[in-house]
Length: 92
Length: 309
Length: 87
Image (spheres, chains in turn green, yellow, purple):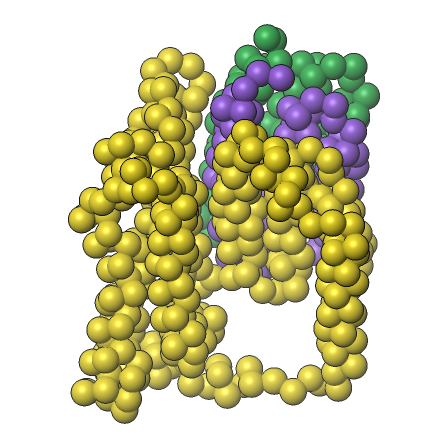
C-alpha cells in the first residue's frame, strides 16, 4: 500500500518538475517582461505545490508532512507580492 | 551523481556570470543565485548548518546589503571609477585566487582515505555538554573563544558602518524614510510574513542545540523580518544614539564574556563550563547572542545614519 | 525510491538552471530578478525532495529559510530599483 502511495507521489512530483520546466520555457521564450512574469508565477506556485503534495507519502511525521506546505504558502505570498511590484514597475 | 554534477556546473556558471556582469544590479542578482546554488552544494555535502547559514546570510542578507550599497553608489560615478582596480590588478587578483583555489582542491583530493579526522572524539564528548548538535558543541565548547571573538567582530562591523556617516549625522537614524505601505501587496506581505518569520527564527535559534540551526541562522531570519517591516514603512529604524539599541547590540557578547569569566571562578578556566550547568549556560548565551546578531545584521544592512534623529 | 527522488530533484534543478540564461540576457532587471526567483523556488523544491530522500535533519528548515529570505530579496530589489530612480 505504502509502496503504491510512494509511486503515486513520485508521479505527482514529476508533474511538479514538468511545471518548473514549463515555467523556464515561458521565461526564456515569451516576448516581454509581463508575459514572462505570468509564466513565472504560475510555474512557481503550481510546481512547488505539486512537489509538496507528492512528498506526503514519504513523510514520517505530521510536522514533516506539513512543513513543505508552509514553505509553499510562504512562496505563494512573496511570489504574488513580487509579481505585483514588478508588474507595477514594468507598466510605467 | 547527476544532481551533484549539475549543482557544481551551475555554481561555476553563476560565479562566471557575476564576474562578467556589466551592471551592478545584475551582478548582485548573479551573486544571490550563486549563494542559492552554494546552499544546495552545502546540503549535498552533508553540512546542513552551513547550508542554513548560506541560505540566510549568503543568499539573503548579503544580497540585500549589496543591493542597498549599489543604490548608495549611484550618485558617485567618479569616486567609483577611481576606486575600481585596473585590469592588470584584476588579472593579478584572479591568478592569486585561482592559485589558492587549486592548492586547496589538491590538498583535499590528496587526503589519505580515510582522511584524518577529529569527528569521533568530538562526538564522544557531546553528552558532557548536553548538546545533540555536534556543530553547536564545536562552536560553543571546543572553539568557544573563536565564537566569542566573532561576536565582538560583529559589533565592530556595525561601528565601522556607522563611522561612514557625516559628522553632523552622527546619532541620527539610518536609511531613508520608506513610505508607509497602507494598501497593496507590500502591505499584506509586510504584515503577514514577519509573525511567521519571527516564530521560525526563534525556532531555528532554539533548535540549534540539538539539530542544525543556532544563533546566526535564527538571528538572521529575525533581522530579515524587521527589515521587511522597515522597507514597508511599518517599522522605524531607531536612532543610533539610542541607549536601548546599543544595549541590545552588545548584550550577546557581554553575556558570553561574563559566562567566560565566570568559568575562571567556578570551572577550569576562561570559557570552561561547570559540568552540571553546561547546557543552561550555553542556551543563555545563545539566547542573548540571537538578539545581538539580529540587531547587528539589521543595523549593518540599514547602513550609516542619514537623517537627523 | 531515493534514487528516483534524487533524479526528479536533478530534473527540477536542470529546468530552473536553464532559467539562468534569462539572468544573463535580461534585458530588463526585472527579468533577471524573475529568473533568480525561479531558481529560488526550484531550490526550495530540491531541498524538500532531498530532505525526504536522504532523511538528513535540517534540510526542511533550510527550505523555509530560503522561502522567507528569497521573498525579502525580491522585494528589496524592486524597492532598490525604485530608489535608484526611473530608467
